[in-house]
Length: 183
Image 1: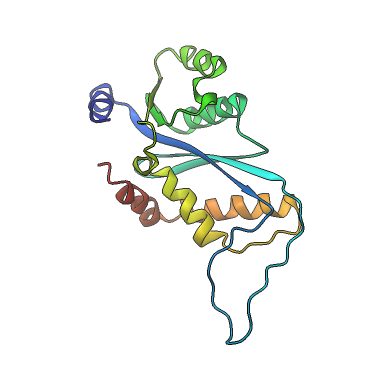
Image 2 (image 1 turned 45 degrees about the vertical axis):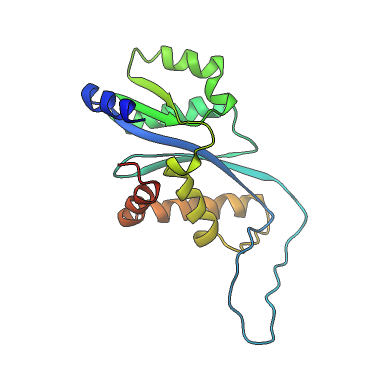
């Protein structure tokens, strides 16, 4: 990891950590307060439509895309294009060993970028090194706890709004880096 950081600094690359997560219409239950003797009740229907998100974090901001269903190679390429559109210059993406990250489609896309995009893998079984993991934890435990959407579109809307709110708080983005204790 230290070698990748030094090479990125020498080459003038922006370091972006990337990770994926998901939500479903089933609420993410967290402890909460209620009046004494009145147990809170979460009412939800039994639809398990899945919403997936992919995010990348730099020192100053994080970028995200939300997709229905699972994230596969085409969605990863869409997100990488999104990153390259918003981050000028050379980019170093550091991520885990998800099979879609190693696919032919992603490799071909990276090769077509003529060296502007470089990929590095995190060590196996080390999610605590990726600051994006802390984005997902905050998103689920503080922005959307006990949220019971009426339908899939409400889930998508609220998830997107929560990520936008988080992105507008620079001290919060900085705290994700501090939690990962990378730099």
